[in-house]
Length: 381
Ligand SMILES: *Cc1c(COP(=O)(O)O)cnc(C)c1O
Image (cartoon, rainbow, N blue to C red; front, side, top):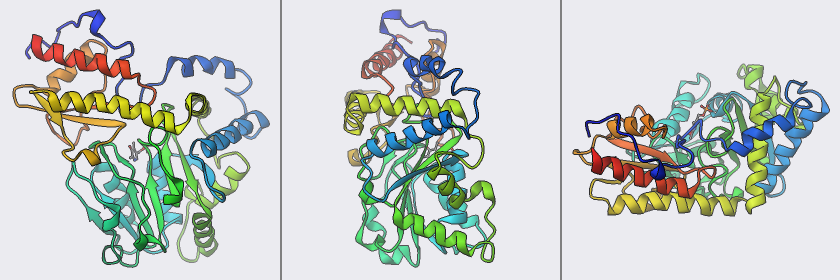
């Protein structure tokens, strides 16, 4: 594979060359709809009815999409899932948390809790990269006194997916799930967790900058209780206050100015998924796309799925290891040279690998085309 300038025959190429894990492909229909929202929403005050109505429609749309049980509500704020970790350390975890750690993102939340001065050392349930944890392994011994149990539905750095299942040992604690690269593309039963939060630029194909969280009454009580004790117990900066996020969300707004374009894009995506049949539909679609890749890789004589156990393979983020005789870095470069982008593996993993997102916005036929392109490059270079 020496020819980095290899040109792929046009008939082989996907119609859209974006396969990144986030920011991810935004559908053309979503983008062109932006003009419909100008000038009455774009460039207008987020404290006035048009934008507040949009926020309300997003909240209702998410409630419908996730079939939220009674008592759950949708809150939102600025800063993405990363800020939500800080907000949770400030206003959701009472004293101690317990974390599933099996890759970069799930481990980051563990690190946040560990570095928060007023929290006790968090407990951890760890798996090697490429492997997953079993929520049933949050035994009372592991959990210790933890009042919040956290793991990621989908570990974006490795393509490992962990089921959202409430285990008996977790009954007292809040189950807090990072849904970032799954939400919108993977079915989930919200009864199985108390908090499900995500950014908008991954499976939801919007843009960065906001976090959304689906929370139940138990989580609301926790947020209100911690806020009522602050600042005597801890100082909660206003921009990280879940209590303020909750109060503002109930008025269909954010504490400070949100990215209006991100709101419009996620609204369009929620409506699109609902119009196609909802989460059940998008779940089927991402299963179809990811199976195309896993089945191909299993049959291939030069690559194989990185996640060995099929039960842990993500349906929205696929990771494929290549044999020594194929240089994945060069492969990604040739693809990029041909307008097929962001198939590089997670930067810190350092494997001979490609990572290919199979979010709902990505057409299964484009996944097929991508596979043909990879085969072509490997055979012709
Ligand atoms: C991308 C990602 C994050 C961080 O999201 P930001 O919007 O960049 O803060 C957190 N968790 C998971 C699982 C992710 O994939």
